[in-house]
Length: 464
Ligand code: FAD
Image (cartoon, rainbow, N blue to C red; front, side, top):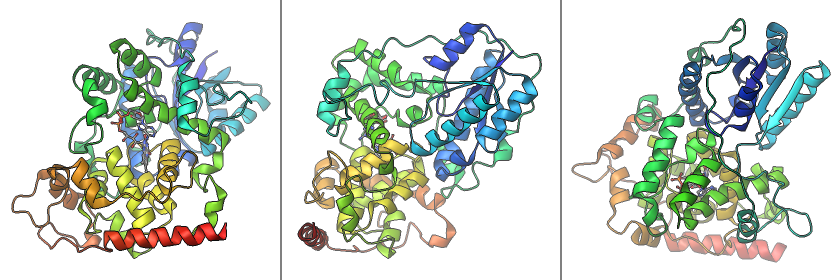
């Protein structure tokens, strides 16, 4: 009897513990992906990017003699139906760790087992299971440096090879056509523009890693903060959809040697999942609930200008436009853009979190929540609220020649760059923006915005 392999964020052949183990059983295997309410709740760019990943992964599976079966609906219902159709004895999957994914998986496991079907979950999305790293008291860590010191002492093991040919079932169940899922429909940025900037899939991820280790890793620690440079790995979206495993990155990087800074960034991803495991509410609520009384503004006109890359603060606008066009934003730019929204514009971090979730192709439920709460000051091990990034001096320091700003801002330039123009191509007509219009004036003077944020902080502290 076959085993159903339910793929979600593990779209790879190599170092996939679930697939590796399944292939070893010698049983017929039926790979499945389900557009379920959890996936439907993802942001537009994430859903689209997942679809792109599925399309490449289906081809990789086909080379192994397998088909990726696509179905739409509540996962527990679809899986039970597939078991009934195929006589499968079990359903296997790689674990997810965000609260929505976990709730779905628990429900699926209960339903399958109640019907006498096996259900088994595997690691693979992380280097270390979130509860494998504990303090002397057996609790989770709240500070990254201590967490990473403890985690780095563990051995994640060696990456597993890709399987050989997979045994097919006696007949393949029906599958949806990927196009019928219409995953591009909700994209705000034009699909054509995003597609130009996207290269999904496992082969591309592996190529990117080796290219990074060969040509950029040595200068990573020194250059990673300069958004105009191609100095980082660009692997986040591949990790998000499991097109590469963190263990492969760990192992290949370790072999190259001397890349502790890069590995510690991969460690931040681990830490984000560690925190989310221990505090699942942090995806939606202030990690430190004292912040519930902070006078952040709800969504407002300034935040709308921020979303549109029209705040009049060039470094911030460049960041938002980069995300709109490419589905990515440089880490330094993420920090400055997030700080500007939560501090200068005094707006609730969840307004920004939601926009990132809608626009990022590397959207990750744990890293996004940690990033926003780190900047806002409400998270564990966060930057203190009174440390307000100055968007002007950040630009001077990390974009000294203005190359990043010029790349993304067309207004006021005789010959705007192609990327700067792509933003206008991608933006909805209803925004009524044009590259030859005047660049907007500032929403708020940086010094005034800083003062307003610090005053709010003092008032809040007095309340505590
Ligand atoms: P590299 O510098 O090459 O780092 C290697 C890998 O380490 C990354 O691919 C990523 O998986 C991980 N990593 C690096 N920095 C961080 C970090 N600060 N936190 C967690 N993991 C990290 N990252 C996401 O993957 N998805 C998100 O939704 C996301 N939202 C963010 C929101 C905010 C407000 C901030 C400040 C950061 C956010 N990050 C997020 C983290 C970080 O900005 C990106 O992971 C990074 O820019 C991706 O580029 P890269 O792959 O070239 O990273």
